[in-house]
Image (tube, rainbow, N blue to C red; front, side):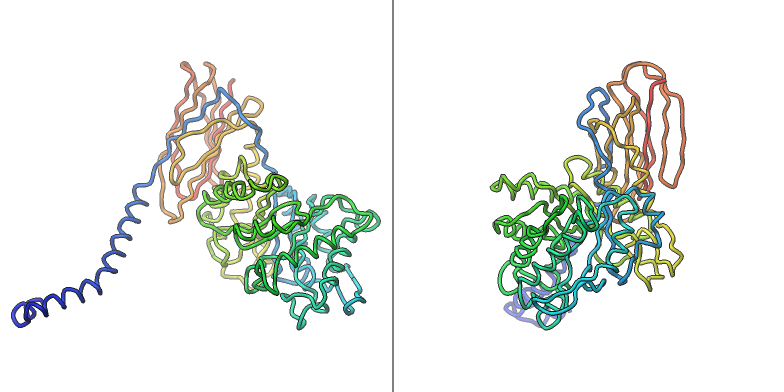
Length: 467
């Protein structure tokens, strides 16, 4: 084609052809360059070179915050009961459920003349309490008997009915003369910004602020109750307009909540910092607890939730939030729904019809629990391998996780521990589902150096104690 143009076309035609070619192929060229740069960036990420300073212990690290779990409403029954013993073993502090009104037939009657039956909902709440956890009840969705057009994702025909439903719910579970549970969390709705759950906005007829205000009014009207907490907005992500809109509403807010489904673990702490910045003009709200009431690497069902990929992502997120993170980080979810034999469910367990098998994520929480203690300074984290360290009862522990979103990166990680008293030490390496080794070490200059091979999606805890 080029030869034909050179021989037959006049100069003006050549220019036109060149321009057309540039218009057609320039975007492809730019995309190709961008792809090459992205590959180069992934290939040239920073490898870890971990240095731990053992001489100056810092703040205390608690592992309670990640012992929080959410169960979705994939079945209209007590889905937690089949895994109650396994859930107890997780030592949960708080467990969240949603769909409490539409799945459990709580509300009947008509506007101004409502009746309540909590028997079915009590079953799952009793299960939660029996695990040692506090319940978080997502006030969702709108009871059909009060909803506009009978749709559970619509506004109520009368907002006072919605307030009455919330009031009665709080009285039942937090009431001293009823279930008498102290410290229940009530969350206004579930993912209100999602079309599936109503496409609520911060203005207009389906205004989330109105939904929240009447819920808060109902909760405040509850009498003879224990301490409880109400909050929101429980959006699909942390969105500034929703947080500021709620902050400006002049309503009771005991905590802020949102969901996070992001593959990059470092984005989770970015959200924490953003929230602090947004709430600076609101000093009465800036120190309110924060709850990530669902999290994962994607909101879609994915077979990777049942692999070491899902486990490593969970561990990498916990590492990012281990200091200065949320009050609670809720793993979604405890058990798969039915008809997910392909392994794509979000659960820590497969459904009972699929063997009720534990997935690798289930073991992450207890594995990381030994890391409680006083935090030590760590430098040299990389693009894939991240770390934190603690000291407790004289034992130094270093947590390592190699999370690679592409699933293939492995590396040898140099480990240097400084500020050590000279003497003899016992050294151990423990990998989740992997090797466990120990050795005797001698420190003569206050420094111990090791090297640890980290396969993709692996987690390890190193322990060092003086003899």
